Amino acid sequence: MEKSLPFWKTLQSEVDAALDARMPPESEPPVVLHRAMRYSLLAGGKRLRPILCLLSAEAAGGRREDALTPALALELLHTYSLIHDDLPAMDNDDLRRGRPTAHKVFGEANAILAGDALLTLAFEWLAQAPAPPPHAPGALAYELARAAGSRGVAGGQYEDLAAEGGGPVAPERVETIHRLKTAALIAAACRMGAIAAAAPPPVVAALGEFGERIGLAFQIADDILNATSTPEQLGKAVGSDAARGKATYVSLYGVESARRRAAALIAEATARLDGLPGPTEPLRDLARFVVERDR
Image 1: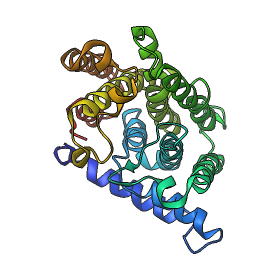
Image 2 (image 1 turned 120 degrees about the horizontal axis):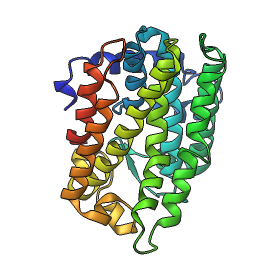
Image 3 (image 1 turned 135 degrees about the horizontal axis):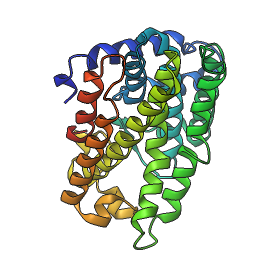
């Protein structure tokens, strides 16, 4: 699907090159730790969150280069969360992005430290990129921290694990898990792009609402792929949600109803782009990609 988005490969390459250039080299001590950080960060991936950040800056009337540092920080934090989610104490996954997970290659302790270091580095980079007026200088760090903590990614992972294997789960709880674990960081990516572009609060809010809805749709699409794809196609384990008794839209409603819910969320998301000062077609195309992708 990425091949049908003309901007995707360009932005993906920009993000990959910037991450590679800014990360500590493998030769710098502690060598094993830096190898583990780079192994997970530079393993490929869609780069959805940084690309959303860059495109949101443009949709808000700014330049995407103004949002590059926040975009990179988002990918650092996202990668940290994947490393920790894959650990035996969490989801216990052996495969990520088509190759062994960090703890399988470097050991559990080094994987934990690599995740910790990537999380910390995200805020080190953001500290060097204060937000422009009318926003407070620390606005970008605030957005990322709010989306990452107990009211965001960490809280969502807790709720996900707590609901696992416990039998039927109320739809409201599934929505909460998805909103915290996935949608919060994607919404933050869009808000951070707008903030970096010095957008006024209404524009920041509109892009945040766009991001939250495509974040929910993205998680539903992930759940569908886990139920219907193959490990070769997806680059990670499939069927694991059902095996672990995870709370998902698919487990609640089935695949076809989940697809309809994702499509409705995308329609809600794209409506939030109407009237923005910059180009919005790339974001609209990306929203469609979220539910049409095959990995």
